[in-house]
Length: 434
Ligand code: ACO
Image (cartoon, rainbow, N blue to C red; front, side):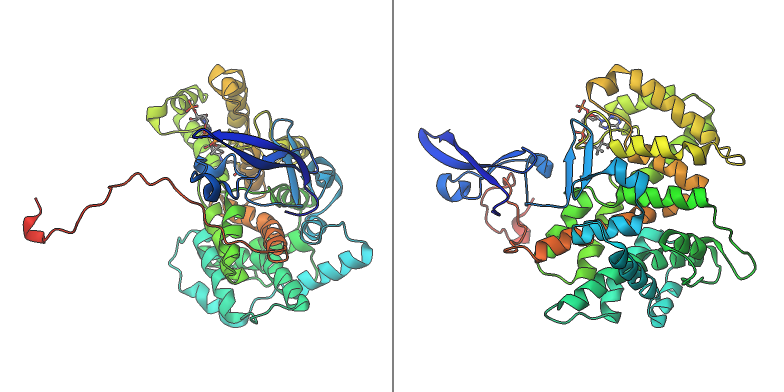
């Protein structure tokens, strides 16, 4: 335990007629925890917490969330302030190194990102091996893992190598993302350019071609940059926990980040923004107003959920969804962007927010309900949505990895289980089996 935790009065646990004293602690925002690290050795019991919904697996100083109050802060700064005033590169520095950079630090960091954006030429051959139509998340996971072979790590990471690897990953993830898109549409790869800043560079690599200049639209650049900020960290979510789990084995950082990318891919996590659009397209194609889909989402037997609704932690509203809705109306109402899916989304939200099923379960729109619409308006194809999420989440994953490896001690993640399979039985010869 660090000295940031305040020791409280111990809790008393009565179990099998015996009394045990368990230390309790309070974090800097008043969150309280019972320390059960010695529970099994003292009592023979483990805790049962399906999906870890009630388990604090680490101490962390990166992101603070209060799901009941709809609070999200990176290193103490409210997400609303960062979204309004900051840019993704500055937020990345904040998450990674704990403080907002001064002008000199920001310039140095941005320059390093720019200089690190080109990937080893030989990596390009890999892109030729993927079949047409490969999901870009599959390509991204493979390519990030393969970087470990092009940029091998020393056994002991010195400070400069670590800073460089972090910059490589934050920068190169967008190069790989754009290359995989270009490959999927059969166009030549567009290299990163010193002319552009982080987000503009990515959009240029995605959309320009030798025969087509791409004019950066400042509203689109701003909206995508804001999306990246809103996705940059979210404390111990599924992909970040995967990063910490893989990192706790002291695997190399490329493998560790690949674990995060794999976890992010699922439709209940980062894949949800793609699923939201599929759902809206389906409703649009069927011509209904969404009532029928909502009825199906309420029916457990249908296997459907209202995608973009609900959150493990936010039980009143998702502050990221509010920021996005507020700041991005400008983009969605721009002349020329007339997306029929936007009206369907607004109608679905209106119906669901008045429906007792969603109200009683505290299900509200999450960030992904709106993010897909913004990405569509920016011309990003649906199968790239989760990749954009991964670009945004990269500094968060790396901040958690750094926090873990620089912590007092790295304990390998190894939960227990309650075994419910067959009890002891003995091997039978195949002739005796029924
Ligand atoms: N549509 C319909 N019903 C839902 C939904 C939904 N989107 N979400 C939860 N419920 C219902 C569940 O069926 C359950 O009902 P019950 O109590 O009658 O059994 C109840 O609400 C609680 O659901 P859980 O799955 O226990 O909630 P949990 O906190 O574990 O799950 C999750 C959160 C996975 C995000 C869930 O709400 C969901 O699947 N939402 C849709 C997918 C989505 O939008 N994911 C993006 C998350 S945000 C992000 O990753 C950035």
